[in-house]
Structure formats: C-alpha cells, structure tokens
Length: 299
Image 1 (tube, rainbow, N blue to C red):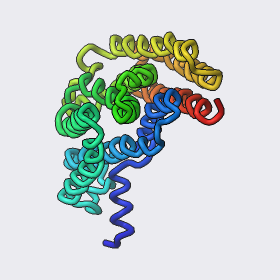
Image 2: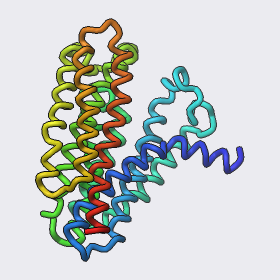
Image 3: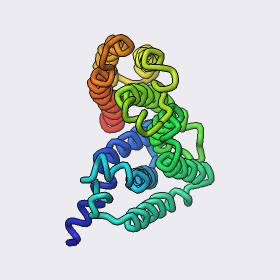
Image 4: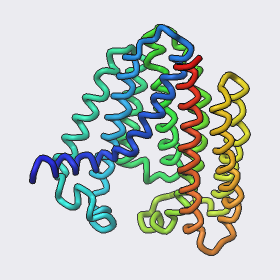
C-alpha cells in the first residue's frame, strides 16, 4: 500500500473535521485569557492546541479500534475493517498521538498536567466502556467538549501563575456543555433502535422518549435563558448577533422537540433536530470566537 493511501486512511481515522472544531473551542478558552492579559505570549496557545488536537485524534482512532466488529457489519468502508489500517497500526497511532500531545502539557505545571492526563484517560475509557453506559456517556462527551475551552484558558493561566484567570472561560464552557448535552440526548432518540440492538442503556431506553425529550427541551431553553449573560458581562454586539441567531435555532428546535414523544417516528424528527443543533453549535461557537477575536485585534 502506498504512503499516500496509508496517510489518507490515518487522517480518515483521526476525523480531522471534528478535530478542527475542538481546536476552535480551545482557541476560545485561550482568547478569554489573552484579551485580559496583553502580555500573554501567543506561543502559549501551542501547548493546549497540541493536547486537544492530538488527544482528540487519538480518541477517534481508538474508538474505531474498539468498534472493529460492529464496523465490519455497519461500516465496512472504515479504515480498519476495510484493511487499509491494521488494528496494531491503530494502537501504535493512538499511543503516538497521546504521547506527543500530552508530553508538552506536563511541563506547564501540576494543574494542567493532571487536567490533561485525566481527560486523556476519559477519552480512552469512553471508547472502551463508558459509551455503553448511556446517559453517563452523553455527559462525558459533553464535558470533554467543554473541557477543551477550559484547557485553553488553564494552560496560559498556569504559565502566568494566576489560576483565577480560568474563570473567564467558564461561561463559554457552561454554554458549550449544555448545548452539547442537548444534542447528545436528541442523538440517542435518533439512535434508539440501534441502541436496542447493541443493548446500550441510553436515556430514551431507560426513561422513554417523552421524558428524554423534556430534558433536551429544558437544556435548550436553558441556553436561551443564559445567552444574554455574556453580553451583559463584557461581550459585544458581534456576540449578541450570533447568540440571538443561535437562540432562534434553539427555539425552533425546542418547539419540535416537544413533538418527539407524540410522533410515530421520533427517530426521523430527531435526525432533523440534530442537524439544527449542529448548526446551533456552530453559530454559538462563532459567537464567542468572533467577539473575542474582535476585542483582541480592534479594541
């Protein structure tokens, strides 16, 4: 097999489009500190980007490793079941990504080191077992998304010997966690039949679609409720415009989420709502990112 084909297979395993999204949220965390501390070196962004980018990639690779048997049936075109990447190569790639991604973080200080190590362990354990635990897995995925923002702020804060600066990342992290958890619950409704086959104790299987949709609805309305807080505490009109666009998407999704417990085919509606929430995640992320970048370069 040529080097080009092998490299393409590795990149496919690493799901680079998802990794780029994680890098953006890490940037948001770093920016929350950078706009407060003008003397912060831009090079302080490199370490959290390495950790998030490479550990996230490792998580996707090891997830495919543990899903080999399932993917042989459902996704035979994936790199491992198709034979383009061997299971042993996947393990070596996972270990390499983790070592290269984690090692620089160990030099920052104890808080960053422990934070990165614990999250790396969670990433691996999620693929190995946690994802089968239903709602617990949903919470872990959502936390991991939010933790990229916190790490982006924690690393420069520890380098500056001022951990109190991490507090500026908490609002976007809470926003991200809540929005991601809402999407995760909607996704479990979409996947309810597949989860029955795999015997995953997902929230809809445990408490039903109706109660699960109420939780997802509550989370979406909670985001709408807190979306003005950043604007009232320092973010500007760029944030507000995109936050209101996100709110419009969430209100549309919330109205339709109510219907999930009453329609005959909730999986189909949940699939559409997941796409709406994916767009809301993008606009919500850009609300923080664009406003912070504007404050950094123009204020």
